[in-house]
Amino acid sequence: MKKWSVKLLLVFLLSGLVWTFYTQWLIYSVEQQQPSKSDVGIVLGASLWDNYPSPGLQERLNKAYDLYMEGYFSDVIVSGGLDYNGSTITEAEGMKRYLVSKGIPVEHIFIEDQARSTYQNLLFSQAIMSENDWEKALIITHEFHGARSQDIADFLDYRDPIVTTVKSEVLWMPWHKARETLAFTKWYLEKALIQLQDL
Image (cartoon, rainbow, N blue to C red):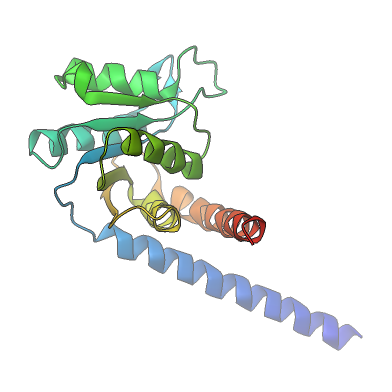
């Protein structure tokens, strides 16, 4: 009985190790994607600090601004609901104010302010795309978050989605990349449940 317990523990540990290496490889593979011209840019939300984009979120928004100025897209969707950190405005509203302050005309910024997860970010943004007859999106987020965002966009049948990522100067990547393995696990379980419900 004891031998079987040891074997099961070893199998569990080995499986966890393989899964970790696999998710980290996925993260790395999406980091290498280059942006392409699209109908719209989608900036995935992150925390506000005192109703202002956190340093990490500013990195995503600065990337979106640069891509906008370089002509990769002419409209932007900012996606993120109300955080639980004491903010009184949604992530999307804070993101919009930041991009307007940098010079993007307000009429070119579309708010998605209900999402509370990456899946919802992309699901609800897809509805805005449909309303505006946009077909192709350039999704903007951090390196550690790109692979899961790509997988979700593929699952939602985005047309040739491209995720362009930001290399952070303010976030501690070892923590975020390790945490992303857990987030991937949660997403795969959630995806399986959605697929079962659709049967």
